[in-house]
Structure formats: structure tokens, C-alpha cells
Amino acid sequence: MKAGRSRLGSVAVVLAAALLAGCWGIAPVEKSGLTSVMGVDLVAGGYRVSLLVSRPPGTPTSGLGGSAHGKPVTLDEAAAPTVAQAIEHLRASSPLDLNFTHLSVLVVSAAVAGSGVAAPLAILATTRHQVETPWLVVARNTSAVSILQALTDKLPRPGDVAVDTIVQARQGTPYRAAHLFTLLNEMNLEGDEFATAGAGLRPSPDGPRLEMGGVAVFRADRLVGWLDGGAAWGWLLATGRAGRPVLTVPTPDGPVGLQILGDRRTIRVSQGLAGPVAMIGIRLVTSVVVLPPGPADFWRDPGQEAALRSAAESAIADDVSAALAAARSAGADVFSLGEFVRVSDPALWEAGAATWNTSGFPRLPVRVSVQVALSSLGETVCPSLGSC
Image (cartoon, rainbow, N blue to C red; front, side):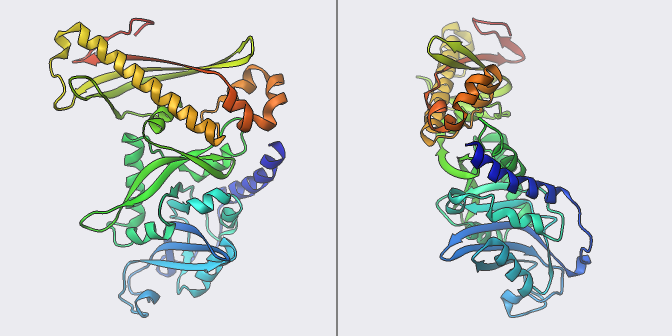
């Protein structure tokens, strides 16, 4: 594992250093084609790179017969054996100097992600302009270029629309996109794997719309599996990434929403008789949002209140367990449990580091503890165990 990480690490170091460095010789704005979204697909013989390019008013638009009054944002594509060569083809064919300083979203197909993203994206280290760290999403059940095509006509600008969609997903769903820099960092951390949101297209009267769906889990820089539904929520809560979403808890009288007001996550690794044992503790303070046709007067019945809290704790524990099972099946420690093993017992970690994702993490016993405190009209109902 260490040898593989070191090879990937060399790519990451070069890429990170170049991305942080500024460059001279940037073309004037009126001659610059600002790229906001980039897509990378795997095709026969190499890669297809697609770019959404914002063009200054009055510049020729090759996609519309060279008209000087074409779309302000166009989709440019090129295929080549490498991503670097495809981008060079795009540079050579464009009447503008392609500028990556506004690259905000990077979409890679599942095939590209599965084959490894570090090497194809090394071209970003040699761009003539400084590149900001874009959101990285994996196209699911579609191609990267299809997502860019759907964004072409979106206003105010495709890049803004894509970023808004990602931010909204991070605030209210388990489909949490991460930045490219996060991948470069985490693929070199032992016992800590990368995850980011999947992206797809949803039909609508105004044409296909971008939506987030699923959590793509990686081992180093390769896609190895997905977390969906409850498993995605379990991963989000267990890793402290939940934010303030509303969780829906089923009850016999109907669904009840719990708005998360505060959360605390603890992870401990201790030595058991048969080896290390991990404990994931989750504590949530929530506000109750009754969803029709749920019970609106359950506060009058202490029994219903206790039942709701118990149902919430059970549902969350089940989601965390589902996430652990999916991550173990994929062999990707997106819970960073290996990092805690390394800190608690360096000697034990060294002995099993090379096979952590394939045997150590899948076999590590993990206990899940969940406490949910209910709050109504500013009054917090403390859990039966522990303090508020």
C-alpha cells in the first residue's frame, strides 16, 4: 500500500504545487475564454475532454458557423490519447486563450474515476494560468459531457448553476461533494480514504437538470463503490459532515422530521482481547418538525416523545451500520478508522497497514452509539444517558 501511495503522492505533490503557484502572461479579458466546468470521459483510444467556455461578446463561435454573435457559453470537445493532448487540441482550435482561473467544477465519468484520476488530471499542473481548486463530482449513469450539455443553456452561468446545486446538496442531503485538493490530500493519508458526490441528470419541463445522487467512495485515487440512501446518511453523520439537514424518522403515526441543531461525533479505538475495537459515538440535538400526517401533539404524551427518540436513534444506528458494511465491501475506509488505529497503536498499524483496506478495516469490530436529544420551543429534552 505504501509503495502505491508514494507513486500517487508524487503526482499529487507536483499537481498541488503547480495549482498553488501563480503564472504570468495571462491574456487580456477580451481575448480570454473562461472555462467554468470541465468534463473528462474515457473513450476508445483515450479521453474526451469537454469544456464550458464563456466567450466575450463579439468573438467568433465555431459551434455556430463562426458567427460573431453566438452563445455566450459554448461547449468545446476534443478526444486524444491523454487528457493533456485533448486540452492542447482545444487550445489550438479555439480563437481564444483558454483560461482555467474560473474552473469551479470538475466532472469525471465513473469509468475515469475507476481507472484512477490522478494521472489524467496531471495536466492541470502545467496549465498556463493558476487553477482554483474545483469541486470534484463523479458522473453516475451518464457521461460527463452529457452533464455539461445540460448545463450549457443554464443561466446566469453554467458554472454558477453547478456550484449552487453542489452547495445546496451539501446543506440538505447526504450527497456531499468534495474539492479536488481534498482528493489529493486524502489519497496520501494512511487509513483515510476519499469520498465525493455523484452527479446525474433529472428530467424536467425545462430540460435535464443537474442533481446530486450517491456518494462515490475511493481507494487512493480510484472509485471502488457507492453509498446510497440510508448508508449515505450514516456515513455523513458518523464522519461529522452532516451540517443541519432534516432527518425523516418513521413512526407508527406518520413521519416526523428532525432538524439537526447541533452534533458531536467521537471515535475511539481501544485494545480488546482479540485486537483493536472501534467505537463511533454520535450525539445530535434536534428540533422536531412534524410532517403531515404525523402526530402534532406528541409533546403531550411522554411515551410518544421517548418512542420518537428511540426510533431516531435506532434508524441512525442502522444507517451507520449500512454505511460501514458498504464501505467494508468496497474496501475503502472512508470513516478514517485507520487513522485512529495508527494513533492509538503505531506498532499494530505498521504490522497491518499494507492490507488495511482489504483485511484490517473490513474485520475491525465497530460499536455504534447514538443519542438524540429533542428540542421544542427552545426547551431541550436531555437524553436518559449523559448530559445535555
